[in-house]
Amino acid sequence: MDIRELKKQSDLSYDIAVAKRNALEKAHTRLVVVYNEHLFRADPETINLIKTLSEVHTSPFYVLDSNENPVEISNPKEFLQILVQRNQEAISSYHQMSKTFEKRND
Amino acid sequence: MTKGVLLFCFDTADTKYHSILERCVTLVKKNLKLPITVVTNFKTFKRMKPMGFINYKFIEPEPGNTKLGKEWNNVDRHMAYELSPYEVTLVMDIDYFPFTDNLKQFMDTKYDFLISKSAYDLTDRKSFDYKRFSMIDMVWATVFVFRKTSRAKRLFDMIKYVKSFYPYFIEMYRIRDKKFRNDYAFAIALEQANGMVSYDTLPITLPTLPPDCKVLKIDQQGIAWQYDDQIDYTRDQDVHVLNKEVADV
Image 1 (tube, one colour):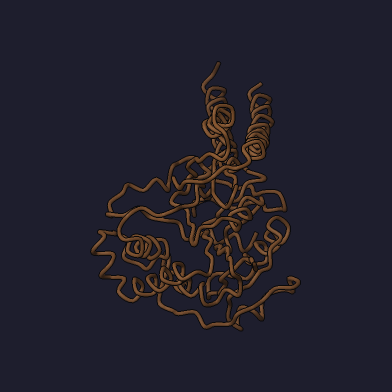
Image 2: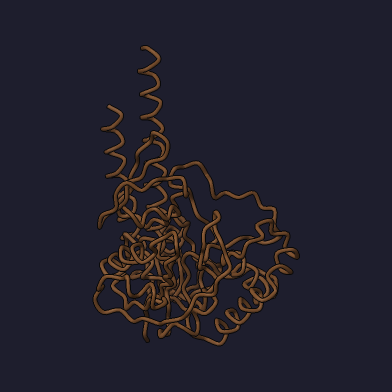
């Protein structure tokens, strides 16, 4: 491989890395969800917490929002559904984007 | 409860801010679907093309600030509380293009005031990861949400106070940038009004294009830009554009 080809590949890798980071940031922003007038992240930690509490604790129960304020969760099933839906919306969009990165790398 | 978007727009000798506003309004209508109030002056208003139903509030901008040697009318943001006709208001810079509905949900929280503390560079050069010289975190007054409550009113009163004694406050907090910046005025006021302890923030990082990026194209879905010999684009993601030549794209 000559140096021009290496430079081309390096530029392509840079482009893909930037696009990937932007797509990931986009997904992170999309993970933010408002529930009961509070802010949460629909991330694995929140989903696992709500799922676990709903299984081992009677509702209502209490969790912290993204600003560490306590929130009463009286309908965990509804909240969990919202969290999972938002999580998958954000991550599936990121997944679709990552497919285009693979194509650019071929 | 009334909700809406408040935008400030004043043309200068160098920049046709009304052109930027027109793009922003189109995206707010498409993606946020909220009523809009534009704070402007008659000179700028006369240059705007018809944008459908929009409320206008006319003020004369306070002069005096510059950015990169050019006139910069940015010091009226402290009047947002009085100028907004809404109970819940989203204030945005007009060069923040909402290609998504992400901001809309923040109008439905119980918080009196929400603002973001971080921005990230879409070119991945980490231009906005400022080394922290000052004693307080900076906030980005590019986007913020407030409700008309007594606590929010106190905060805006505090912002006015900070603005009045800005040279004193930036010395006290060891802020190196001596020009008036809403970001610092808001950060100082939040610190003061909250008793020098932490405050609630928007858990988002504002996607931002640095001033040295030339915007090549904007459409309804996204934006393409050039930096050096790199051309890139993003779609379905809000973007704060710092290069004011975007007015001519």
